[in-house]
Length: 565
Image (cartoon, rainbow, N blue to C red; front, side, top):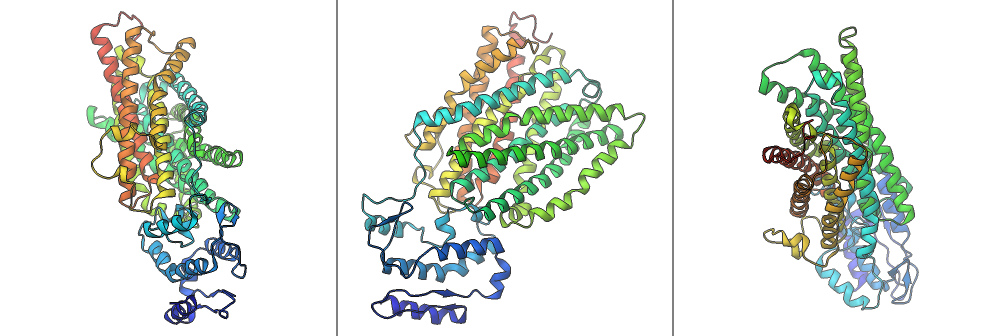
């Protein structure tokens, strides 16, 4: 069937909504006029529709480029191939839009690579046809190749920066544990991992989503870029406020269960401190994160390598400092001005509807506004269990030395696994259709699949695992030189600590490989769903392994009189 006959049949089948005018036998395509029905105009956001129109306008249908010529790195196709693609795009446009509206793969659709959003074929059969037509020497768009050395250098500096941020947070926690608020309201220790975990639940998730958007070309347009940024920041403020409140409720419940004691004034103070800390810290870190990702795009650095560690570099320190300051201030007002805590909590909760309205303006954040709560709340509960372990460990005077190391081991593990999760997610968004995974990820999972291989994700897992021991050695000696903590660096202490840290990261990287591919296979966006779970598991594993390490050291007698001093 000729292209003209195919176009005519297609025009008749679509009715008045689609009009395709064909030129004579020798003229190729002369014009393409697509009139979308009013119902679709109301379904598709204006900015998104404008972008699609711009992409269609960029295709010069009247031109007759020579076969094999290149423009912007892509091969210009012959007229009949271009015609086939545009007809196919038009015929499938309503299906694609309805799929987004019905929720099928709705979390991932706004982040898919440009070639899928424009409607081009992404199935295996057409890819094989294109490869045959292009030939071995053609230039095809693909993810940039990274050497082992380049990847290591890009990861190393943000990793060290994030590590020093967690060291600073540990030193701050070691100081503020002696403040009145922390001494008399010990449930604040339960809040610490949950609020520090917000950087994994929210900041790292934002960093991963925006990094994926940069890599697949969704932030090339200024309109789409600012829609993504503003919508995601507003969504993050909603989630931070709600999760901060729920974390306080969990801290009150977990603190009440073992002892059976409950004080309303302490519960209100916990809610106010948690909500205010989550809101302020999330806003500050979100602004920093956007600047980092936009700067990475302009300088040509892969944001997957730098965004998530930098999101955590000052996140722990900022969050912990705000929590300590607000808690201590509200505690001093508890007797003379007991209503202050209630007013603070009510003020930040009343701002929630404003952020909901703003976040609902962009399709990506609007989708997550309804579907993105499960991983965030579940991660908060997991982190709160880690906080309960920390609270009970700190209550033992023999194990008080654990405080300064908890943010370090939790933060480093979360940073490393967030990098790996973000990289795998970007790879899947770029190379695989939703619901499909690479052949190597099919079948039952085994740990060698993560670390043994020559692919980009295998190399990144190897780099991240190799950074654990030298990184922790640097941070341990930094704490020692700053004369912080209650534990001296004996050989047995360092051996046990490094073993716990290595086991934590080994488990997290393995879980990340399995979890990200499983979520993609089930139609969930790993950028939004995997990192909260992984960082929360990092908090739980890190705190539990560190508590076991200190118990073990105390039982065997480390010949260290400073343990628990």
